Structure formats: C-alpha cells, structure tokens
Length: 113
Image (cartoon, rainbow, N blue to C red):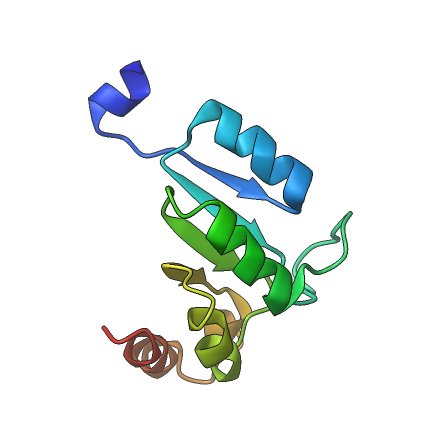
C-alpha cells in the first residue's frame, strides 16, 4: 500500500497460469505475460505460452494493465495486439536492428502511437 501511495509502479513478470494467479494475489500495478514466443536472450524454464494462451490470460486478467513479452518481433504485433493486451515489450527487435531508432519508430507506429 505504501508503494502504491508513493506513485511508483511495480509489475510482476509471469510465465504461465500458476504464476499469473500468484501475481494476482499481490495486486501488482501491471502483469507481464510471457514468454509468448521462444526467446534467445535467456534460458526459460517454461515453454513459450503462445498467442492463444496469451489471449486467454488477457481475458482472465483484464483488471490489470498487461504486457506481452518474449521473442516478439514487429511482424507479430498484429496477432499480439488482437489478443487485447495493452502493451508489448521487445528487446531483440531493437538491439539487433541495424537502426534501433528507426526500429523503435516502426514499433511505435505498429502500436498506433
């Protein structure tokens, strides 16, 4: 409660249904849902969740701001956004881009921003 009163936001990253339920129990500012697709940035203990599961999680957790994360590229934005998730987090789409600034502009346009 003190954290919330301070204006800071604290999100919880989840990797499946059980973790998502645990996150709900603590009432975070937002919930990250992933990894949606395979990622090479770190070793994952769980299998990729996929778009269908992401869509189901979005329906279950609609009371929270939700972030899709994990192996997401610009080409996948339309199917990710179609789930109703509010935000998308990317890493490789920027750090592996020949022009990260142009890549960021393209990603923001895909988000409608």
